[in-house]
Image (cartoon, rainbow, N blue to C red; front, side):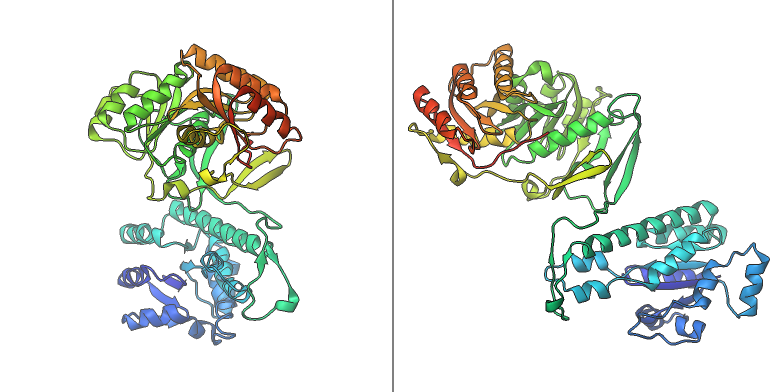
Length: 528
């Protein structure tokens, strides 16, 4: 049995080679890998000795040879193939261990030159990987250090790799080639090439949106069904999910997550991550129906639940702080589908032991969790895709432009910032009433901003919450004064809106007439 080893990332390769040698596997290698193995006292044959042809062109040409690809591609069960190998003095290669030049890591570095990017496009590696993966019945192809242990375990146990493992290794290899080629395509088609600037030090300008967009995801799990029971669905994650994102979560108990659970959980999690202090977000059908901050997670939950107890039934709850026993006991009194937090105390987990259907999700948050966001957002349309930079804008106090005679109080400004954070996560048209760090009424997803305002008032009334002296955030401008009048009639004393309407002055005049304060944010937050 012979193994060809050619790796860029040499993590764990010496230990792997030692294990293979101990099993009687002959070692072939290239360049730096061969030198490393030889320094460790391992008997290794350089590829140049196998091919009878020296490595050349700074290592660009070393494995592109019939004695390599013939040894990988020959079918052992085809007499004509084996006869051809014998006629040309080609020996079979039974195991290929390859990882590719670090193209993705190279182009991710600030100031990466075009020359460096091009030099890190692997040619021989992918060619060998494809050859071995195609001939999976006879060749094992290893493309990642995480596979080393399983390969050695099977060789020790059976003296060979099983068909099942070889096939799974082949699939992983083709997936890796797809990822690699996609990254190269994304990079090169994003380059604004300027021939007159071309040099070894040329760092090209790149467009945010490449000429071809290649996304790569890994399946997390098949789902029982999709948004509705007649639809099929699966959940996928990014190849390298961001720390603190939903895809990094661990389910501690409860039924399998559904398509709608995951969609709503993401809405709740992204919203609760936008707060620096202890916060609770309750989501129903992708909209926050209750949001609050508090001195403790229990206080935050109690305030959030008050906003809309009816909608909170069967909702998704997210905390940005660990859940303790007191909060767990309060939450356990309501019907909840999914409960998410960075952690749960042992006492909190004990509270939910009897609630076997409650899905508990633990999602570790990094220190700078508020800054960890998706960079891009996608939306499928008929035979196409809409791609945009994510709405990660954070409003600061200094960004607010007071446009009315009446000035907001410090407390109102604080609540306006809170309301604005919430409004960003509410489906348009969004109207959010807040006071003392909690939502008092939320109107979402209506064709008319007037209707959203009225619905927010109706919900507040149903929850027995007074909207007197509340602040209001509107995700987009008021095109007429009527929307402002509705929220002021409900009790609002201060309003935040983007501004930018042809009738801004009319709305400002109305605010002055009604004796309320108004600030312009200069940014809108449509969410469709």
